[in-house]
Length: 133
Image 1 (cartoon, helix red, strand yellow):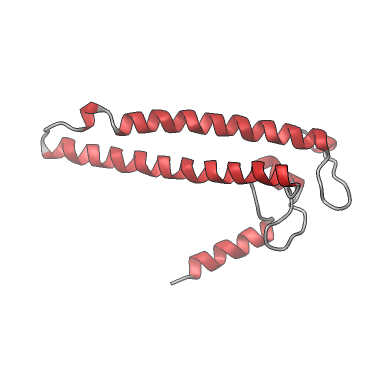
Image 2: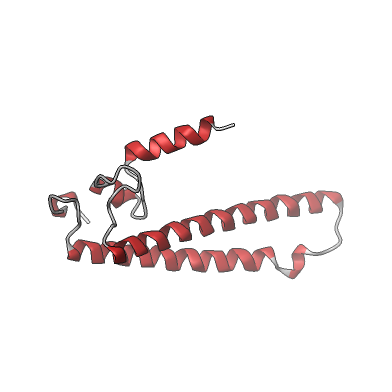
């Protein structure tokens, strides 16, 4: 997906061929995440995780388990974002900011194809989240 092949209509909608390419990228990423999550969950529930051990091994297992849980949580969140992006493609709202309703810049969608907000709205949202009590 090169920048020279970027094309969208004046109303911000993305051409059908480009949309299909994005849909395929999202499906591939989703498949990879599902596979990763299966491996992570298998590791999380592995029988060797539930053994009697000394305190050092138990502490190490706890850190490993916490790390795996964090990864599973991140993957679950990303999967939800990908599913939402695929739904926006189906509904014809893909590439439109969910807050200001302006087109999301194609470069942003190139880097983060499941982005639902433009850079300005995303920055504003993050600033609000960081200042919330």
